[in-house]
Image (cartoon, rainbow, N blue to C red; front, side, top):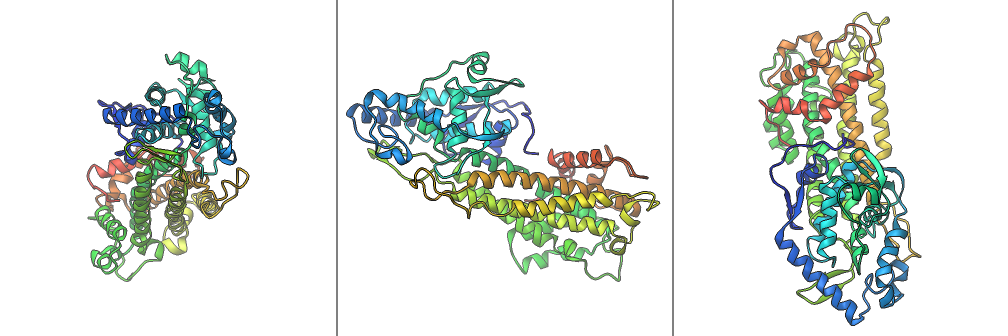
Length: 518
């Protein structure tokens, strides 16, 4: 899901970056779908004013952290005027120490966009040419190779962001048109020249939360899509199990007015409207929790995702490097806006909230395949014994649920001192972000398994009896995956169902006629 290669859509206008107006969907449009970006004219004036302030400080020989001093534990080491420029380039080289597999290109593109937006606020002191270089790399699809491990998320994402800055200066490596190239060669082939950094610029490029925020934005976007998918898939299961629709009555939601509960219940009512399967067993007065409590569980996830959106949209429109320059007030202030704690806590919550969509989904899969609970053929297959049907598909879902339990251990409660104890409390925000992304992907696969099983079960009941929204979802899956008469190789079918959910194609097919709230 969040690991897609760059996909290009057609956009008539560039996204204008002013430092204050980005939303999650903007990040996805640029990072994943290749929308172009440009600097808002008003932002240029702010950038120039802050740069003039940096140059004045250097000319006057003032001692300012990161401009005329070393970094971290070396903040008390004053750098001579002759070495101030070398200081910035040394910083990038020494801090480019991330390890592990490269982050997906869309994550790096998102981080580049967010770094430009932070610089556009005019508190960082870089020259306009630095911002333009980042934008040109982004628009021409020169994507630095950024290893995924190595950030403590407190002085920002120092190590991974340094790998982006390397390419801007003609070092490191980059992906360009499907090839992994030396940074200088990638710039050359894209028609760009390496840039030499000046005072403050190295620090301004790497001191921020853009890696964790980019990961978070993409994971959150996919999580909102999965939440809609979870409503659709669970509604199919509800019908296949001839569930009781009263649990979704708006009176119940009004009696406990959490916003997510109300919207989730409304989604379920719309999806099953007109169904002749739900409520078809008069003797059944209530269902098991995995059916009856869909609005409560999905609704809690919806409310959590709304909170995560608020946090991320503040963060991606913030100045989060150090020190910050305030030209109008004539101040240079050293603070801690680079500390990723707000993002770390939000993304730990994102992982937990999305994991619950998978946990309750797997319990519904168990109800579908267990004949004692479903009244359907064992493991949803004819000639059981000779055929195993969906037996091991449920194992896979259970495995992913258990993996998510490990991944949901919060990263934000951990800390480890660094830089000779100068940086003695860290957020681990990028670890939280990477885990959240994996949880989102795992839940997409769990829901894909439930989608397959629910449609198989519906075929035993009668697909013509489905409701307004569920019938659309059923038909969309059946375009690619047919009823399973006997055992076959199952993983391609799971992959197809998962892709229909992850790409949004199944949700879109339903929403053409049945709009859903999140």
